[in-house]
Length: 596
Image (tube, rainbow, N blue to C red; front, side, top):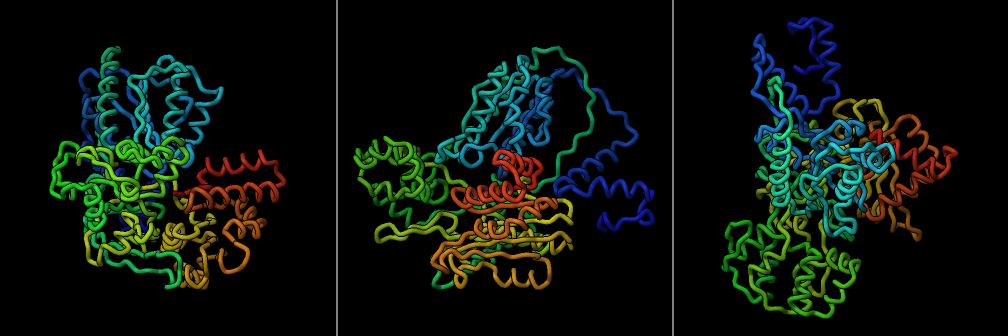
């Protein structure tokens, strides 16, 4: 029976208690409901028992804050708390968006795990905390001991900037580092584990040195979560990989369906699916041949032995390269071209972003040891794809909208790692290792009456397919406005028939499309926003939530600037007031982005 259908006649609760229970759980997620269920079960088992006092414990406690855009920092923070509890350290885990920044003055021990968003910006959930730390309102923190773990991507100019900002500001406010900040690249597991061990050792020592007292040992019940995660993915089945762009399209976009079977994996609209993949064996052989090495030669990765071929297939990134690898190959090969590239940080970032490992090797030959070569590469990381389905609609399936990354390099076609795997190498029925990456920074409003505006050009349409399926399944009455853009109407109108059906049923209130190459003048989604400026502002004034998904480098910035112009014009506001208006929308989680 659903909780909303519960009545006092079908339970031992009074009508008032039923109403209170329904109100208390109305806005809880599936994970939160599972935790509450487990907690109440534990309370029931301990009913009538007096909670015993524990042995003396440190009077201080450890607060763990996380700032996460896609979920990586949250995952690390959860593992950090588990490690703290294993050491009998009283730890509290809090998202910075739920933390009262003024409480910093009362903290004695603090660990922060922070990711960086876009061009050095804090994640959406950390904007206010970041501003508070940088403001004159931030208190002196002479009694605080802390450390910061920063997550980032070294291919971006402002690598780990949010973590650096937090670290520098806390130190400037008088706080004492228990250990130095660690800046992690995309392959962060080993560095995160090392920092966790060192930070907790220091925290434990400083807590032990403080006066102790007795604390009440209340029953603790861990949240019920899936056994499958990034480190332990589920071996799902690829049910479908169907091209949904036309034969003459410049793009290859696939609608992918994956069967989750009896995994028990749960997701919400707005979440992402992590996909592990194997590299193309043809590309692996090409790399080994170019190096003049042997496929069966043994190499070591994290104290485990693999053949060189297995390492390049299953463990290492070869379809993406890093500045560090380009620098290493420039040194080994003495390539003048590469040496010129590495001398300029901007050129190096651009080169690394647009070349695969084989492209670097082809610049100039070098004799290199297999182990040294392996050590210079990044470890393979899963790709995250915005989920394009609502579980209420597709049940034990999950759908993705995957743009196959491809480009011509001389006579050869280069394909992306995961997109090439899902879009071609993996046949239907193949095993795909997956996990759900929850994204609480990209969620439908809890009130089903709230209007939403969704801007999703190209494969950025994916989460909005999930949004509309979810609103349809839940009979939400709020208005829905979708803005979609791509190159051509005839070749690139992704999910066209679905949008038309939603328009006909009334679920989709308004649909605006922009096809940039169907006329002489390029038209983009931001142009459609400008044309509908009065409606955009009116919807926002009515409480609409606004979402953007897709390209971070150009589209998202152009849409943001257009929104500022619309707000200034329609609301008769100054540029500064328009900025503040959008800032308030972001703080209220009414302006959310899923950009890449």
